[in-house]
Image (cartoon, rainbow, N blue to C red):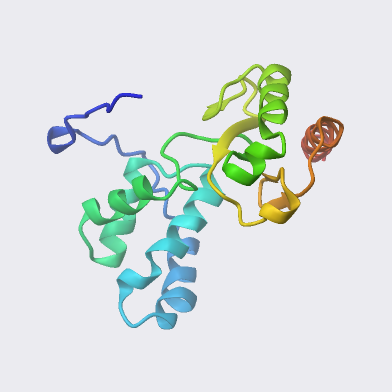
Length: 183
């Protein structure tokens, strides 16, 4: 893996005609989140979670809006987004599949599961299917070593995975998305 550098100091961030941080979001943050923290900076991660959940990624323009709202440097927002694996600057699929690839899961056969998902969905880790349905991640320890191999499907942990169970979970996620689209 190589490091990719960006000339970020002179990057111009395109701004949409309507802000990412809607008046409703800002009101919620102002009235519910900020009172929980001694400083406004403390609300950064919950705000990032909210934006990530709403847009399935955190656009750079949204980072500027968040920084202005919290009265912190935009670089502090970008540092947080780039540090944590759960935040992304590129849109992720409606279903994010995070397969643990640390030691316990490796011993218990995570590679066969990861290879199966890669082949079935036609994507590599950190890629999203062309239809925007699935994003595949190879994740660090999910904290369930005694039930390895494990994976997250969105925010739900699934333990003692088998290829058959993974196929059922993928089919269920696709069916749920189809059902939501029909309503």
